Length: 101
Image (cartoon, rainbow, N blue to C red; front, side):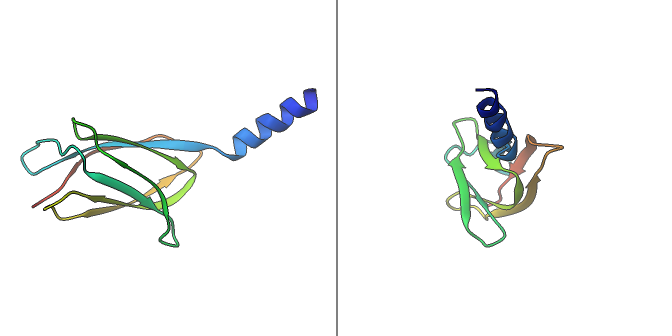
């Protein structure tokens, strides 16, 4: 029983993931509900994605690693951000990301 518990703890440590959060707005500071936020790995494979809520906020769960975030909304120029989720900082607050028309 103890071995099984130790094994489960070890596995959970190996699979650490973090939260990436932020807010998407337009040039005037108005939130953009429904904006797309997608995380791609180094091989350009989609790892995770979400859309913003009514306040323009998003939460994206990602395993440790380096990603290219692609943020887009209809009629606005897309924005890319490179981020890394790592042991020292599993949770990242990206602040406000402004999209331009």
